[in-house]
Length: 407
Ligand SMILES: *Cc1c(COP(=O)(O)O)cnc(C)c1O
Image (cartoon, rainbow, N blue to C red; front, side, top):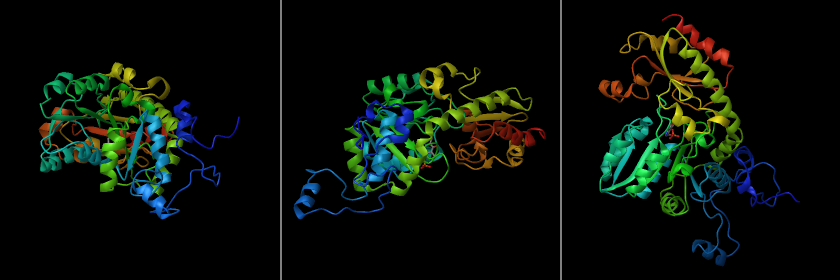
């Protein structure tokens, strides 16, 4: 036996091990921790070598817009966790989504997408893609008939976020994948809320997974980044060559931060899930709370699907939940009271952080929706979204109690 400096044995490792060791091939320095390569270009040994590398006859780093050894470790680690052949890292989650769509679609193409989406994704689909002649039909995430009915002859791509933000609605990845396949569409899943620790969409039939690494992958609210994961053809060729030309590149420093974040991702997701489930049960029993939305609750309409689709036995149901406070659901006063009385939980739109964060979707992340659209999707004025962090559960409860006592 010997120390494995290469990563040739890594494909057998389990998620906890991949999270700590995946993707790193030691350099000639025999470093133990992953190095940061802050260099924009790489020196060729000769004119001939330069020519061979430009011709693609030799592989290796040439220019950090598309090849950087630190970013490469991050890409290999995330690809292994998602069970994909290839990963392309990007400068943000939105860059990942935009790059995927621009690389794969052209004018005249059509997208079918779930309606409940991250705000900027919705805005991209509504306001910007039509400028390039790409149209989007929005459907209810959990309505399989609606996905099927929305398909047009020019449909090329399906897009889904599950669990949804903020109501934790679930999309059935396996069944929607079958509909996408039938219509020869590429199925993209935004796996930001679940992370590969809870859910691996590629194994359920999705073609591409996109991530905002800014959230759970970092886990400490420090750096922006994103990723696209899939097979060698779609991601390794089509998206790679587009990205290498256009340049939505992740910085090596941010890649290194994410590598440190991923080391604890399996442990953090278990701990987030544990706190979130306990908090969801507590809120559900609280007299000042109307309703709690969390896939781990038996009262969640898709509790069964969550158990089938996510690795709930080992990692739980995730750290995101929403709840509606009692009172007039058309009046934000009570929800704002609970939020404003928080002394510890941060009032901020970020999520997936070790610090708990709280928001009022109707007046922030979902303010662009009309009152009717919000009512149709269940995002009332009484709704609060919580990204449950890793503080002591009793401190989180006590912080929410300040406001709950007053309403
Ligand atoms: C934050 C987020 C994004 C966008 O990621 P950025 O890193 O902020 O660009 C996309 N999808 C989901 C579900 C998100 O939460």
